[in-house]
Length: 299
Image (cartoon, rainbow, N blue to C red; front, side, top):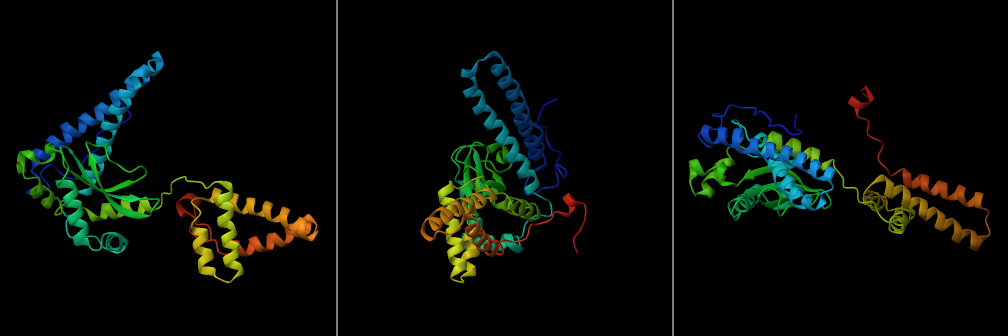
């Protein structure tokens, strides 16, 4: 059995009419998407065979084929869930606020995504994605299924611009097809993807001395009573490992310098620095408890 499988749709093939004909949807899902699933599974087997034979030269082309088919499978799986017979309108809540913040308004956002989709040269996608380093929404114009994609970005809303998605119904008038997609958007699904994507952080640990500089900034802000600045600096650490490393290196540097100048014992310096670090740690948010993981609900 292959690693990847064709997902079932949550609606009938005719459920998206008249915006998307049942014939197109059935062909698109059962033939085109299924071909990407089969292509990904077949390519995985060919990669394993080449690796077993030591034929590493052939892996370059196979890995490109794998990227094409797997990306096609992923984007189509998102696309089906992005659509709903009860779709349309516009989002609310934090996603709506983020769209206003990063694009200026929903109208500007929808115009930009429509332009990215209709403007694809050849085959591709227009995609609303979450970019975790800048912590912002972006729009990507994807070529084929895997070209021109930002590393680390997470697709939230995907508009298929391949001709097989619309040509039998809309012929060569791609803008009309894209306009009708807005009537089908399942914003509940997009919002769920947005909320999940914001919880993902890239592993971008800081080098030791850069982390120590950031830790020093936290302590300096705390010392001058600027709690807001201290909290912002703490939030600048990309991960807990960088935060721990930064304060550890800062402690070692501070102890060696101060001891040389003051003649204090190491125990005295450690006690004093521990107090300072404890004050800084008060700014850290309490650990979040997942009730599903812990098996209980805190009240």
